Length: 339
Image (cartoon, rainbow, N blue to C red; front, side, top):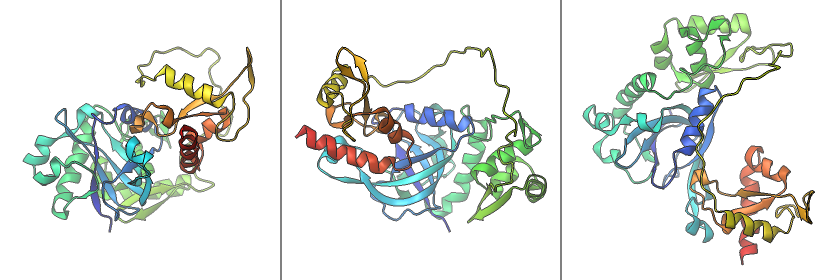
């Protein structure tokens, strides 16, 4: 049986930018994985469930839930000073299932009044704390109800497809499909509509889509002949005259002197592989700067956390499957250069 834990987010230490970005990706129907600190807990395992608790006095409460995809492991510390001393942090990998806007948290007052969490857990200083079993049923029901009416929205509200597996995007069946793509309990599925097993049989018989049960979580699995994403076989027509739209973004302020220092230190070469970038004129060569520990994860904007990379290795740190290993090596390179 999975265990349930609280993990924490402190807006004073970490900007809400990372959460906003996650909400946007969930709204687009994308699976969103993450790495998170788990305090001093070394017992969290794959398949456990976590709730993200917003700390502080500004809209505190539950803002997200996730399943653990990789249990406890040691990783580089989020605090720059401790990381420089070689201190490790306890971490887990998670797969977000729901997240509401930071201002739309399941509020602390309700957590206490409805006895969704014990009082001692509502103001915890660090994550990885076990949620007692007698609170789980009430917390899950309250969270399920809250997220359905919150303003941000998770996967069951933001359906990218207009016709998902033959269902209108606003239909209960389409919502059910989105829940099943990420995984949900039977109570969550039945809260959307009844006849869940009949729906699963329909997906199997008509689209070749199977499901698996992991503990109490039901999840769709895609086979080579399934139509889980309902993708067309012919190339899409696209749009010859795409429309323009404005977008609000959140950015971190970066110190231009730090970037200039790192580029000067690199002398036109990738500090990871040593290859010179392509010439851009005036005797200069193109390289890019990269924050080893991302600013969105509380990384500092200092020369000790910034490395100059060729475009290929810069993209690999963001999208490569070995990104964590790559960045650990980069941290050693920069530490050596700074000394």
